[in-house]
Amino acid sequence: MTCGVTGRIAVLADLHYVVEAAAMKSAILRWALGKAEALGCKAVVCAGDMLGTGTVREARELHAMLASQPLPVFITHGNSELRTPSETADALSILASDAAPPPGVVLVDSSRLYADPAELDAIDGGCGLLVTHVPPQEWGAAPLEAFRRAVDRGAVSLAVAGHEHADAILENGRCVLLRGLDPDKATGGPPSFATFVTDGRGWRLEATHEFPGIRPEEWSDDFRRSFLDDLGLSTMYDPFGGLAFATDNGVKCVELRHGSWKPEEGDALAAAIGSWRAAGGRVLSSHLPSLSFPDGEVSGEEGVRQACETALSLGCDRVTIHVPGVKAREWESRKDEVVAAYMRALAPLAGSRVAIGVENMHTTGEAPEERGFGFIPQECAELIGLLREAVGPSVGFHFDIGHARNNRPFDSRYPIGVWYSSLGGLCNGMHIHQVVTRPGGGMENHLPLTGFFDKLIPLSSLILARREGLLNRAPMFIEVRGGAGPASWSALRV
Image (cartoon, rainbow, N blue to C red; front, side, top):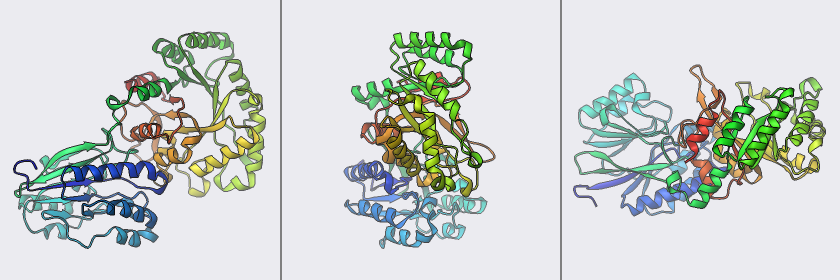
């Protein structure tokens, strides 16, 4: 043990464990627990949001993993533990500990995004480590002042929190934020936990420990080669500029957006594709128009047929088509009609070598009963199964990572890692882009990436899913608006 250190604990946060992504999340948790034991920690303290949706089943599975190792575990809960109100009491009971926290550690419940000032004022003892979920700066004026009083009188020497999914030091060094264990959300680096030590006169952050193999500098040569070979670019609405960049920079996977060029530019486009192929271009995709089904009608069928014929004439290797524009509540009564329309629209590709990727979509603020079909994994899987029966085995899943993230309220129940676990074996293509939260609420899609660990969509889970075989090797097209696609591609070309 380091000289002067009389106690060491590990603090974990924000695993967001969901059953459907158990393979990925449990691997990270077991690593963290094993690392904590190897480092000589006396206890593990969880700073909330260890569950994804707060169900009893999640709590039981998490408890089993925590109980399978020798260190005592103590949990203060976060807002995600409360997401299934009918099961909250039982889930929290499963995770509760009868033992008192380690000496000098104070657990404060901020699961409702607030802390009780009276509880903070009642903290006795000295130089404690306060572990909570929501940072004190987000509690509101009264509890924040109570926290500061606890610091001023020496009852608390340091606070540790999660919730923001990013590492930070606040309150003049008296509050440490952790990025957490969730590979779908940890910002600024791979999933991680931290160790804290005390000499009996106060606590300090000792070190941050990152899940191994996620940073590009840790990749194997084979993994790096396959990842970069599959890292592609959507030309969006600039096919000639995109193809020129791809040709000059060795981008091996390119997606065109049908209709983004004029009919009289067909020969020039074919020549640009030829130059790209000659420079090593490997996978050419075409993003087809959508099919919609308003008021008992079918719309867009002829446009999709023409786009398929164009894709064949350009030598495309694959195409992308959205899930149908039909309400989820109408699916059961209209699915035969929908599948028949897809069969007719995609008929030009029948018998060809062209792969067909069905892309997930996302909510846009509509009422739940008005949402579209294909916004959750089960719906996409059902449609793909029906189309495989009707069209052939060339049909697979085209995963838009931004659509899955911008998909409230389903982004908590079906986070990105669940899509990998559920549909990764059907994946034959991806769209990668960033999303941001608008000032007035809601999210905006198709924004640039600056690296692997951006907020709100870091790519740790993508790397882990590919590495562990949960996600097929497939072209990953960076789909960014405003001409920023090449810069985003370059940012990931490590």
